[in-house]
Length: 137
Image (cartoon, rainbow, N blue to C red; front, side, top):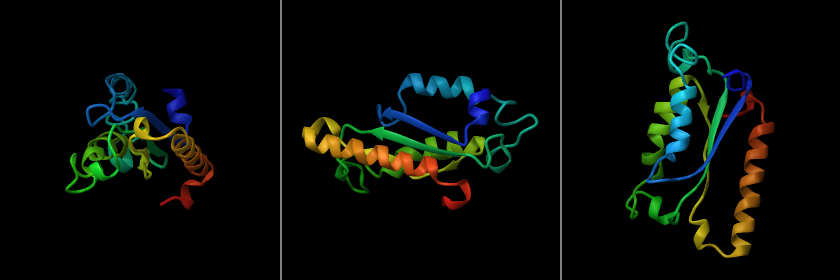
């Protein structure tokens, strides 16, 4: 809990699993985002929660292409899948949620394409980590 409260940026990195977080990551959130510690009790919710003023972002991979996660695509709009994570988990405890870094279908990429995607993900997280809270969003 001390590390979470001290961090200015939380990055959750995972494979999109059944259109959500993997169970082990959801279990971590259930055990760490504790009522009374990060919301509720002496803390409110959303802008009044303990993590208000801090940033969070998702860094994840999918099994499908970007076209499959568009409105009208095979799986539907990515924003629909992310709403419960962004709003119901991260914003609820006060985080300013940043744009996710998504690598679509890495298993279907060539080695060269995966290397480019990995470099882009690293650079995006590095830029975010060094950006001041006031400069973001």
